[in-house]
Length: 219
Image (cartoon, rainbow, N blue to C red; front, side):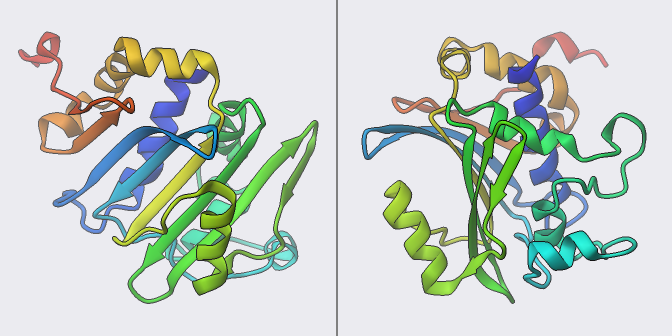
């Protein structure tokens, strides 16, 4: 279902952007936060590259004929019909719409800090079948203003990427608080957890690291 898919795609994106193949220093955090009378679900990765590459307009992206290079990560994330080369069920990159589906308002923001390209941010909202996204991601002070004024959040200070789901579904909030969400993460990501990946859940009252599931201990 949607809750299981949300954790899977969020971590998959973060793990795919890790700064080194073995994931040394990689972290991922799911955090519930109350800001400006709104509930936000923050999906933040660290030890990653951030959304690197040129800041192309949506018109340029949609008119591009052919593949995007692997380091065009901002472009790949912004292009809703781009799947990063996946085939079969992942061909059209529709997993990104899970972030919209996880919001009561079908509304998300994302920001990213890269060593070379600096700070970038954008918003994305779905209205029926119409996906509204700024023609081009904001950068620098303009990007910081977008995140501060609309969400009341401070910009990222560590290299990485953050997806912000505005007003997550009640079922998602409940699954985070009752432990179901952690069990889904364990089921999907036990292998990288066993190898040292650090995944955290912060329900607004306490923050804990997802543990390796004992049921897989003999594998």
